[in-house]
Length: 317
Image (cartoon, rainbow, N blue to C red; front, side, top):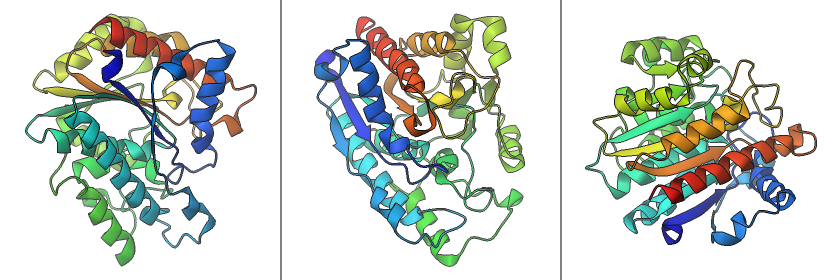
């Protein structure tokens, strides 16, 4: 199994609202040194080219910030993940901002277009916006919208420019011009900071969100069982873990911390439990931002989740 795991590093932070998420991967490596862990020597990482140089350029896209660069990065991520999945590798993706998850999903789907793909999204945010609905224009709030090819025009808040729309259409077609996932094949865990256009979509499609309160009441094992049974018709499952799913008291080192989140222990156990399912084909951790942190605490917590989840994966194969 160790040979089959491939570490994929994506240092893109174009789509975040605050700067610094590109440093998250190295913060995780620093945290591993503190723990005297050999994690990063056991896996040979692939580095996906980012487009962070766009940050130095003028950004003429207020409703889809740096969308030209985001398109480039997502294409790169898609290509990398597609090849790994065709080689039957299990990608563990360490990424900066959460927009790159769209490239991961597109790559998984492109490798096995006939297989139905379920998504478990552990996050404070629903990330199902489009340039027509996003209040900030930050594209880390849009990856699921991209994969669903969902503009959510019924709840349109603004009119993006022709160029923004052109890039958005291109992004939705990466890996093929069709929705990569179905809305009913998304399961949210700990989502608690959403906007009205997102709420309308979530309720329209009946997307299930397991709240932090539910996680505590039912316990990790039960929540994992329920989440996985919602995806019973999916042949493949992808898990995306945004560190802001953890409570803001511990998740200072991330761009958009939100109160009432998971504890480190809950996040750890949840990922360890979910990854035991044989259909899981890729796991991703995103949005560690050490510039917002003190003493690298978020990266230490995130590294613990990364290491324990990987151990659980290896021992269940």
